[in-house]
Length: 589
Image (cartoon, rainbow, N blue to C red; front, top):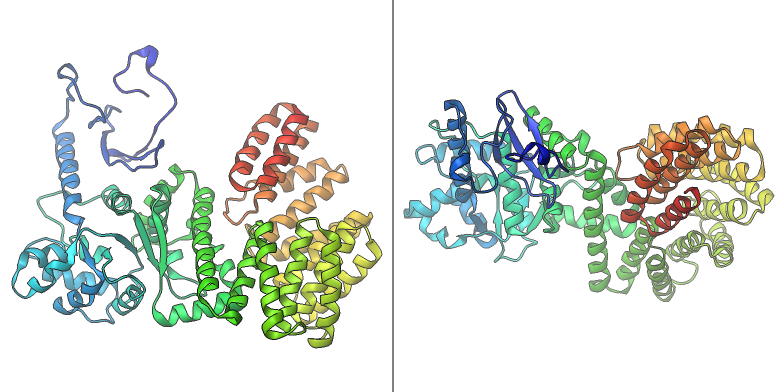
């Protein structure tokens, strides 16, 4: 609805999402550039109380008394934004803690209560209170200045956690720390600050500062990624195209570097498990409001994708930095993780380059038959398989498997991994069904016995064996194994996990080949509509195209909608998917 336009120009494409409450509405999102706008709306008239353009003399707003108070309050809140612009230099942070008589073991709520009591008379933020207070605070006044970093953290963290994490930063950096920057006392003469004030304050400061640093711990399941406000701040970082980094307490970072060096998949799984729908907030109402923001910004799935992509970019940067700064032994380990990460992210050329370099470095330092050297060789063989270089893949995997059996034994997890990849090459890509089935059946038996029936590697083997059965014409065996694998994947890995979705996608292909279009349509719908950032671009894309094709068989009119969705996903996620989608679109048209 265009406010102030004539009837003929009244409606057009929307540029603002408007959310209603019983008393007023806040415009929270400007679609063209993702900037949140705290403009007050009048629900009684349905018109803007505060227009974005200048108002002419003949079109002044006519407000009720209640609306006028709200408009005046909105202006006050805008003014308050100027009062929360201060940050504290890293080199002065500990001094501020000492002068405020705060204890390192205090958590967010305890710090808030202490600061609230200290500033009760002035109603100022802790930093502004110190900056204007003089006296004992004069020695830190020079450290209070415009921030260069927006610090995202959980209130469960202690001040000690924060101070140790800041040690990673340059001492001249200036951090925007909400507990020190935002006034903790409400002014009784003003209406309470609504959620829109807080979201706008955080969003605008992220945009103004231009960089977010997130404090993250513990490594196995970072609390930060489970808190609604922290995920909102990361979204604000993405929407404003701000820089992003992560800081950790010293011991946590040490554990983190060891983890990504030796088992990158654990942390990759951690950052891939972000689900904004499940994030919690201290105030239930905040969780609901943030959910509305996310809904207006594209939905949980889209925001999850944005957040995880930004975390993955940071993860890759960390690995690249470690490759540049470590000695040759450590460098080879980090390079292996980097190559494996690229392979799992679909960047196969980068994966090949890094894994080949890691293999040469490990051969030079550890020897050709060392378990770590063989592990890198197995990953390189897998990467070749994904690149459709089956000849190179099989040659490497055969040699690697023989050595691993000698060095590690047939029941070692690494040996099982290599046998699975070789069996998939035989059964799925090269149509050597008997060899592939035999190898994968043996693999599956060993994996169930050694790793467990719900281990991720066991489920991958089940998927590969089911695909081999389907390819060789053993329909009953394939269907039974697919259904069992999907059920276990959902229980163990989750509905949005890549392995779950890929197995579902393969089952859809199977149904389609069997001309069971109704069953294929159902499985593709389920796969296509999963709101999760972990979804593989190829899985999304091919589900979309195949779903469109099925509708071409059954309901021709619905094809364009699904094909357009699939092309949109493909452009943003994967080039190979985009090519496939365009081919389907052309042939279907």
